[in-house]
Length: 111
Length: 113
Image (cartoon, one colour):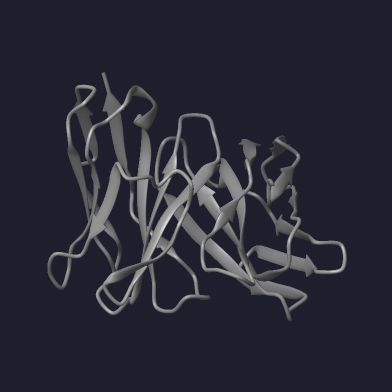
């Protein structure tokens, strides 16, 4: 079964606007992590939120987690051209340590 | 800032050949992982490694694949007889504990001809 489905698949906004990406998952989790990937490059860890947390902030990033709906959102405030990348959510189930990945949201920030 | 490194950045090989992908995890981390990403597809878990043994592996990680920590710093992924469908970006990751952030290397792009 697929875990971690992001929406939208692609998002294009003007620089300075806020960008919101959503992620849904199916099984019970220990934590959920968001990563960024610039085109063809490595995966950069952004933020981890545990199953007993509801919201977490890191700089311009705000992540929420709703375990009852099995969903998470990533908000990037005051977007910059350098935020252009693909954003992935990945979940760590209760039962093991592997990251299970979504297909990602491709974010384009227009200058 | 400590980081995970991987070599080579790009490996081209003929079908049926053996390849070894190398990773140097962050030095005080205890858990090590390999993932792969076929072009345009999701990242997929291959294997996790702790205390010198495999702790989990996916269905992808069949008998063709093996991992090793030959010394205190390197973590390798070996593919014994490569197939065309093994062409992908292979990422190594490490974490301090099992439920902490996983830090990824830049990846090795494997092309099987």
